[in-house]
Amino acid sequence: MLIMILIFLIALLGLGLSQTHLLSVLLCLEMMMVSLYLGLGMVSISGLHYPLMIALVLLTFSACEASSGLALLVLISRSHGSDLLKSFNLS
Image (cartoon, rainbow, N blue to C red; front, top):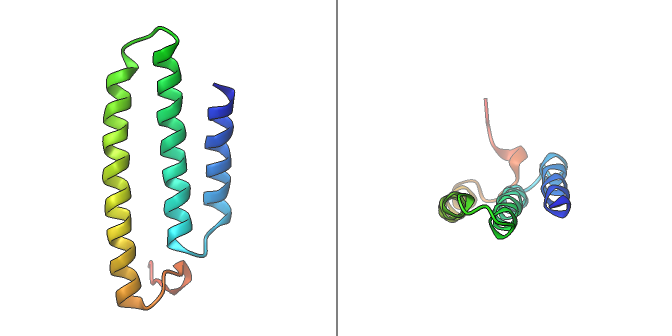
């Protein structure tokens, strides 16, 4: 269980440090979701059966997040010419 927390913290650190490309931000978010999914899987293996439904819902949301993130990446890279976060006007 400690390794799942470590993976989550590494992904959070990567999210904080990699502010250049949109794809790297999306990969860090996906790594955070996978670590949460694995953590819930470990809890359900240890004997508690109620996190199994939560894990399935989390897996569904992470698949939707990945597909919408990639669609947004394609749309932004076609309209702006690159996926650099510094080229976006976020104000």
